[in-house]
Length: 256
Image 1 (tube, rainbow, N blue to C red):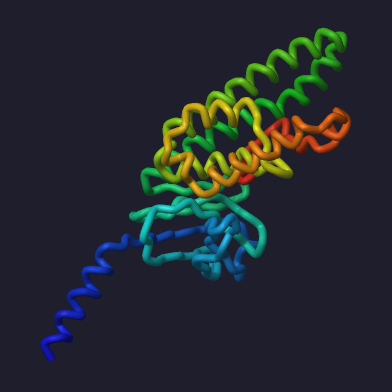
Image 2 (cartoon, rainbow, N blue to C red; image 1 turned 180 degrees about the vertical axis):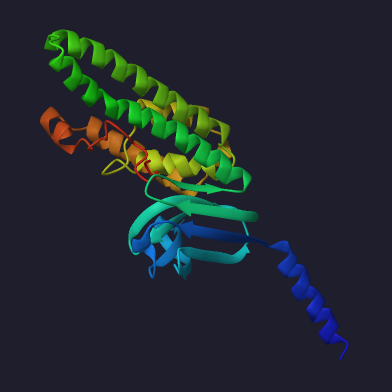
């Protein structure tokens, strides 16, 4: 009989060591009603289900124990909707036609502040095609148009690079750094080294380098670089080059 209270104490202590996450979500998109949503996180380089729920009258709810803070993604079937940091606290998710946002906890607030800034730059880049049409209608010659818009595009791209670099550097030692690194590298068909990636890794802390995704990507990218440098046929290297997104490399980040 004396063992029972002791076991209960042990169970209570083990439970108290684990934090819990609580996600309260709302959707203004009627098509989501009746759908099943999933929270997925990376495990062994694959997204695995860690929780699921149904959308009922525009509301959904996830809750569970959390042994460590982790980066996850909200999915509907096999389609990624938005990133979510699972951490202690009350996490609020709002989805509508204009915007998707997660708030209520420190890391989610920081992530979506970054996403908002990045989306602003993406909008500015997308606006350049509209500017081009307007300038053509105004009778401005194409050479002048290309010069002006190329300069604007280069400025926006530089601001975007700096935004991403500074954010990852500021979050090397929490889940946001590796999480955004994964987002920017997901544009490639296979791991490669770019000046931006080399710059990130040259400044990275050991904790960041030891993240399973970062470590695997960087090692594979280095191996691919050696193989490409060993190829004598330049045309093969060009054919093998990964497709890059000129507008928004953060392919898993929701757009406004």
